[in-house]
Image 1 (tube, rainbow, N blue to C red):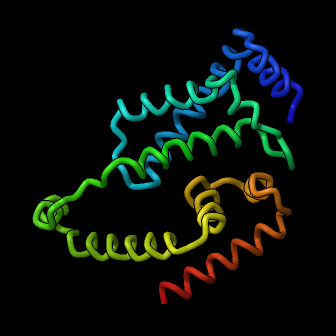
Image 2: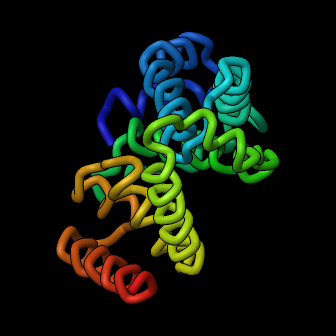
Image 3: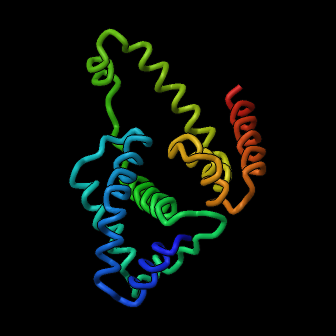
Length: 186
């Protein structure tokens, strides 16, 4: 954890408005774009009002109970405040998406909207469903490895820091998860 991160967090925990303003100013864009990207990665069209609501909810959650959530950041194993905030914003968005009923589209509507590439689009969607189903069968930790590696596209050292493991162990676990997915899909 950097000295600047320590000062911002300490100030927020003491209730200093200037520290809170610094935190928001420094990380607002990161949080906003993480929420939008999470919608995109989960193949959900992001409604601007939903993104704005989650953005506000994120900062309210950090302030709640005298910044209890923010006080949970430890900065262990080289984890930066930015990477931790990204994970928190992603989890908030994923929780929102889980609670939101999935939109259903009639096959006729889908075919009409896809025009020339409709057969290819249906095959791609079927493959995506199979992959999503295989990922759903994984343990929470293995799902997190997939999420951080492929959806968040974080570098291995950041992922290892988040998971509190060495980079070598991360590569081993990632390799095992991919082998499991290949076996399930075969």
